[in-house]
Image (cartoon, rainbow, N blue to C red):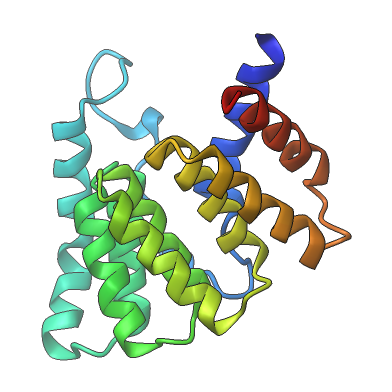
Length: 192
């Protein structure tokens, strides 16, 4: 059971952070507030408080977008602020707008897919990943996320295993190979 928790924790971390290509990701130049910067008694902020903080942080970026609707960097910064505040629907909206400006950017499509998934739109997330895989059928992040979302979002262990086997086949030097192999084993166990 401890192994399962560890693997799932690593997988979710990979999905949220590791699924991003460092070269393609555009980090916000203004960072979202950290927990130590939040007001209150040191407790974790509520989702509403996190949204309010994100709304405040994106105000200057929204002004940039009003002046230049094709400012991809500002769109991405807004998307990352909302994602970090767990405002996945808003984040997906801004990632989608960035994808429209840069339709061949697989990393942005993968980010959008993650946000759609966490907002509950599993079908939309899977469609976004399929779109990125049309551009690059061997993309490790898209294949990993496709397997994860099929397994957890659609309860499709067979589809998840197929995606992960394709991931291992097309990325033989994958640094997270042991994690993927463990997830395959768990999905195989769950499907029996």
